[in-house]
Image (tube, rainbow, N blue to C red; front, side, top):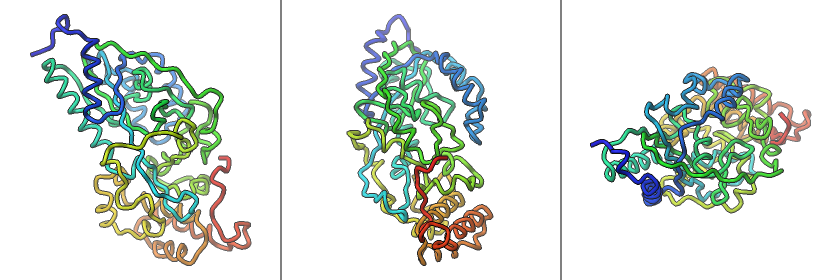
Length: 369
């Protein structure tokens, strides 16, 4: 039975939805309208400048990304949910042989976790009011997640372009339910970045080209996750030991100093990935890669790009017999992409005492791009 609009107290339903969301494990739930007209021009300019790199999907959906009602006809409101993911880690960030992986990827794939919870929230709403039109999304469709979350009162857009919350910093995932119900939107929160530019100064590759603007083509997360081919040689030394994503702009953010750890067991560190070394990960066979990263977001980049990233990390590590042996073992890899990055890494270690590196290929990670 379809919902009869005049029979429903939409304010009360919105409040109920937020409570149901918290029961399901979300740390915050807000409601946004579907009009993103003010953000559409900024998105168009960013795409026109080519800042999306090879992420063609960012442009391929035309106006749908900024117009939820074109993506899901009939959309009148958007439920936005936030779930903290910061796990307890034991990593050693100053060790150049340590493999740095973004904290969001240390546990189970967030897509599965959030999508399941969002579906349960939609089911709960349907149980209360009857059938209604909706679609669930978790970083899986042309949806302007940060803009919607900002309009839903869950935080403000930081200068690194991520959503920031006074209560949770930026260590959280976002998910949405596009619905055909006229729920009243929440009021946006005030912005609290002020004159701080810590994230701009901390970015290893200078990818945050201006406040609130990231050039993905320089971003380590893009280079190690989205980019399918060869990593530009001039950027490889700046990547350091970051082999899947980069958290630097979040680690330096003052709003993350007191950010809470996740309550979700699914986001706990798996297979000791917070302690793994570049050498041990580089030695994984295809079968080990599939087995140990089953259910992980990392698995989506595939074995070849995994080795590519690790080769770059080893090229930036200190020159030791163990590092050289690991690279030599992959010199004849079946993948031309892997071989190219292995050769680059080995070249980085040639003549370490005569090239000014004093036996180390580890350049300053904050070297200007």
